Amino acid sequence: MKHDLAIRGGTLATATETYRADIGIRAGRIVTIAEAVTDADDVIDATNRIVMPGGIEAHCHIAQESGMGVMTSDDYLSGSMSAAFGGNSCFVPFAAQNKGESLANTIQRYDGRAAPKSVLDWSYHLILTDPTPDVLAELPEVFAKGVTSFKVFMTYATRVSDAQFLDILSVAGKHGGLTMVHAENHDMLDWMGRRMVDGGNVAPRYHAPSRPGLAEGEAINRAISLARLAQAPLFIVHVSTPVGAKLVAEARANGGQVWAETCPQYLSLTREDLDKPGMEGAKFICSPPLRDTATQAALWQHVQGGSLSLVSSDHAPYRYDETGKFHAGKDVNFRQIANGMPGIEMRLPLLFSEGVTKGRISLNQFVALSSTNAARIYGMLPRKGTLSIGADADIAIWDPNQTRIAGEMHDNMDYNPFAGIEVTGWPVTVLGRGRRIVEGRELMAKPGDGLFVKRATVDLTGQPGHPVPELDPAQNFGANLS
Ligand code: URP
Ligand code: ZN
Ligand code: ZN
Image 1 (cartoon, helix red, strand yellow):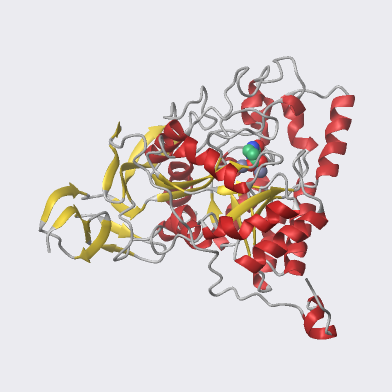
Image 2: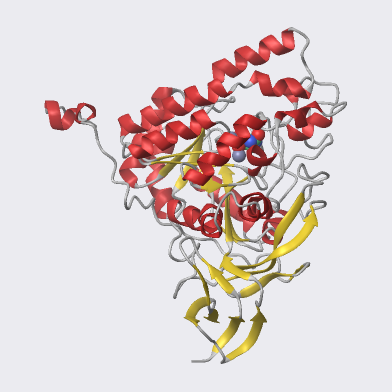
């Protein structure tokens, strides 16, 4: 059997195994995994390298206006390029609905932003900002198009009420969609934020105490309870506290169809970064905010123990100028500064270095957290997120011994919040459907090479849920439910 490409001499790592094998690729797919693949037109020598499924970045904001109306600095070219240099071969940015807009229109708008530019295969999570009955009725059509997950907010101007949240969960649950949620209690944040500013505490450092972990814990607990009542699966984005992670772990132990992620910033930065002189702390304003070192250590334990299924970047790139962080001016209080930081290229090297190299997680956990779990939860397995026969040849080849100090990235940002950190373990070659996207320090792919990935509905295998009888009035009381 002739192959288009062989990857020879490497050590393969999946979410479950590490072993020595060659990979043979034909027509963009993995067709052979064997001790030796010798018949190929092209060969990549992976001796002393680790060969893994390409990363899947499942939380990033690309060519997207924020809730404050600020456009991210990265479009689908710079965003996908930067993701590729960071070891990803697929990403799932958000497509944010405008008020009054149909979801079909939202997807069409984002197709115009993504298709001509992306070097990576991509899909979207929708962001629902206007969940009217018409919009909810449209959700099943959106799922049928392969956009099978969407996010809602419990804070910001675009937040949903508990009643709206229940309606949304109920529709998603019935039609196989996955509801993602930014869980922080809006009124707690607003109350604390106003007290801070009214007392003259306006510097970036006050962003952290204005958004206490308590507000995250309360909202996660409520979100899980609402999902349980609606009997719908739920994904909690960017968990920043052990209290939140524990609630997710407990819900899962009770059979709940609940997953969650954390992000590299919560695992490697702290709120002390907000104390930098002048307005420098603005670079580290993201929500939920950076926490303290004890919180960081406890979050690592949840990553190790498996209560958090993904480590995603939450790449939200706003430059340190008037187009981004200071869209409302330089002389502003912390509440007026754009929320979010870049990290799409640093996510995997940081997780590898701080996780695998430092012995906190195994190589197989790294693969699960960076790729396979995202493929499973977001309906892309077995096509993406694994090394198996028939899978897309989305492959990242890593040099586990390469050490670099983090510096400038390939995104369109003017700062890297992780700059100066020594990182051991970097991707050296990234393939998408068998084509080289990145080779060493060079981009090989062209804008528009990426393809839209039509995703399946959420895979609940092994997580059947345990519907509680008291929550099933139809069964218990003969009630008629719409
Ligand atoms: O501060 C953040 N995380 N900004 C991006 C939007 C979001 O809430 O995920
Ligand atoms: Zn968020
Ligand atoms: Zn986000």
